Length: 235
Image 1 (cartoon, rainbow, N blue to C red):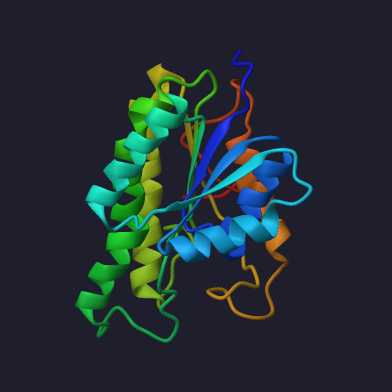
Image 2: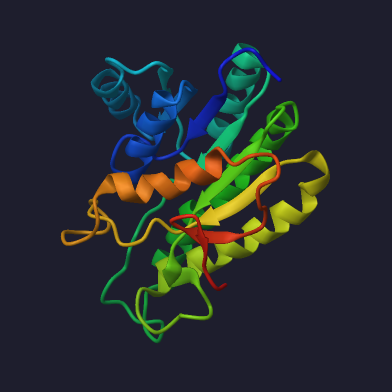
């Protein structure tokens, strides 16, 4: 077992659920790379959260749609730490409430998939070599019940399809990385009162709790699952 603190990377961590997830992992003593598209946003969040936390928050620029930037950050993590213990793919866009699959702008769907699916995919690809060097590697894909085929209905087509695809990616990665002991799970935070979720949802702390649970699973924990509040959801 490593004697150094776990190293975690959280995408889209300057606000909402990502920010609270970064805070909680730092509270557990992790060294957390708090990532945001704009460096100033990452730096501001890290400064605001850092006081009194036992771990370390390090702001990092990361736009998950920028393949070169993703690879550059992976090289930086390798140079600084030599490994990665936890990857939380949280960055997401476009809860397209009011849109319908019958007439939604497919260019907008493409932009949503570029972040919500391909962004998580390229980030995982870049960081899997560093996760393989961890003693207890974990990947958490922040998904949504709107991506559950069992419960899917009309509306929010770009977002819902992107999260269904992210769930499929979770299953693929979990199976392929099982031999490397990398636990890969999808987590639905539920309806949370964030900029994306809007007013009326549960507190951000509740949404982050399930993500942190998946990020800190024991080695005997599940992989390839879809969870909310630590309980399985139907695919």
